[in-house]
Image (cartoon, rainbow, N blue to C red; front, side, top):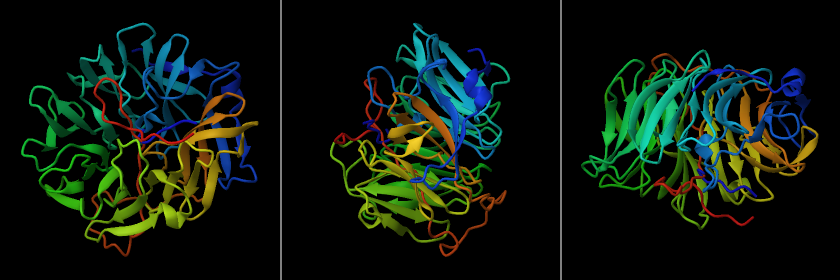
Length: 429
């Protein structure tokens, strides 16, 4: 079973029969999503040999699983016979956003993938594990280099509608971690927070609202503030503590919708622990209290492992990752798809989703699955729910009564051998 706990020439690609057929299936009887559309697959007739986002020496990272935007496009990592690619598709033609030739010294940095509704995808590369580059591309030309940095730069990416990218970087020269925002065309970043004064121990799990006003972040190493989750209002400059270490001992994932409502998955174990902890899902709206949505026990599962939230507060979450009962649920609709369900002419044997960006505002979600016939697939699913309420251009503070039940993304994160923070807890297979 897959274990995940957080776990340069652009052009148009085609999967031949895959694109022509554009597999769209009605949901199997055991699943509750309305339709499933095959975006990409491995196997006979496919250009891809792997869709599992992992360096050769590590486990998959849930920050690199498929992401979806409000246009119903899905971005994902893929391996082909000629190299690695960042690709975008919707079940018909596939667009290659970026490509790395096999055998070179540069590889993708398996630490973040994000996409806005214009189809611009943010990702990073690393060269010789000594330097990193932040890029943004939409497939209409070569991806643009936004910034360059050290080996531990540009992780936990998120991107706003205007292309502003938020990321976390450990600066090898300063010897502390920076939370930064890179605006399109800017040659320097805006530092939103840093760990120089030990107010925060580190940063992870970034998310930026579509209009760029709010930025949410997690604090995996708690500093003197004892904050485990924070939210920045870029319009006012105010940073709010969303949860303290007394309220949430370990934040294993953080997500936010366009209204600024933050969702947090809490665990009794830090996300780098090899021992699974007891997990719970909390939400907090702007101006509202921290509210418990559910625990794994009350949901009747062993663990909550990833969550995404839309602007209406709908929650999509992955449970029991890496086990024979792994499944994706909707907080209202129930079980949508999981291990043992029929899919694309086979049966799901493993399933995963991005820790933050798996659900859009139109009732659609993206996920990765391995099938019993050996294929790996990237899929687009539709719950049939329709459009969620849009976030305002400049959100006003909302009371918790409006957005009480909101969720996040949790993460399954694990350690890479070149200095990445741990992204995966070991789980029995």
